[in-house]
Length: 198
Length: 198
Image 1 (cartoon, one colour):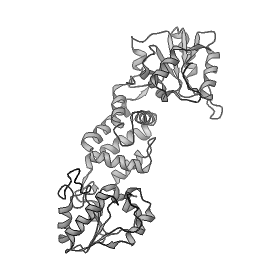
Image 2 (cartoon, helix red, strand yellow; image 1 turned 180 degrees about the vertical axis):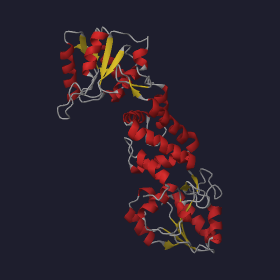
Image 3 (cartoon, chains in turn blue, purple; image 1 turned 90 degrees about the vertical axis):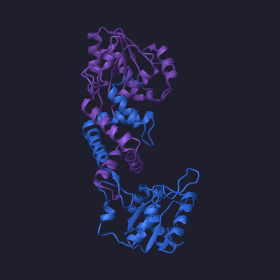
Image 4 (spheres, chains in turn cyan, green; image 1 turned 60 degrees about the horizontal axis):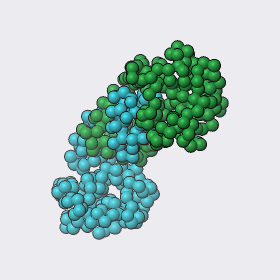
């Protein structure tokens, strides 16, 4: 389409599949990368290769990891007995940026959705229930997005865990319809501190 | 910052240096890549590596290439005797997408700019002058952006080549202040057809 060499056309094609990049911005990004091929393109290729061969899901919590069990699950500094349940890894990262939660996580991998036929088995909900028993969890903090699907999922989990542990949820500060990954750290901190029993 | 493994942090850091991506969109892109690590991340790493080792500047025209002289300069289908002068490779690609120009190119690598201390030697202008003589060029078509710097550069080149060949420039259709890479193909075609002697 641009009569560029095949290697460059291929790279543009792949780059344009990234979220947030279209064909034009992919072409601009590729030209930028070619200009900085020593400083940026080669290191980026190496970094992608390193992640491609090492990235996997933590078997315990579902976080992205480079080992079978992620760094948070194996860290001795993390409090046991408290689990923070998030929809996806971007939300886990948002919690970590706020830096206020010192326990461990459980990544659901989405929300319950009748429309998309996502039931508890498609998420990591059975694993959550077994972790609560196995790890002696006293409190499960639901940090789900304040969307319909997120809150439906929160209520489902609260019922599942009703007699097994305390279930709380982020309360104050999460705006209706808002998503966790877009919140500022202060709001996340306030919401965690004001969590309330479901 | 996200407590992700170092390999993933490194990749986010490098991705956020791409034009059009900030820290948040880099994080989202990396999570997307990890989810599609087989289908997209590994091929993208390979494609970047291939470009990193093979990309170079065409010694004749300054186009990006994977060989010493680019495919357009070596193509026998391309008319000799006509040179289209563009500021950068993105503009060359825009001309190629329009598909109306059948000659060869000369990529300046920027525009003259007193403010940024860019003189004729920083661009590929001396090389352009020697090509006109060596290749027996009859017409040089200036396809520079309709910005102040672009038009200053066009007038400088027109004076340099005055007695050596015909110098024309894209005329009709290039909007004042507009940049070539953002034009639709029809406008570029109209501008090429209505080129006028400087």
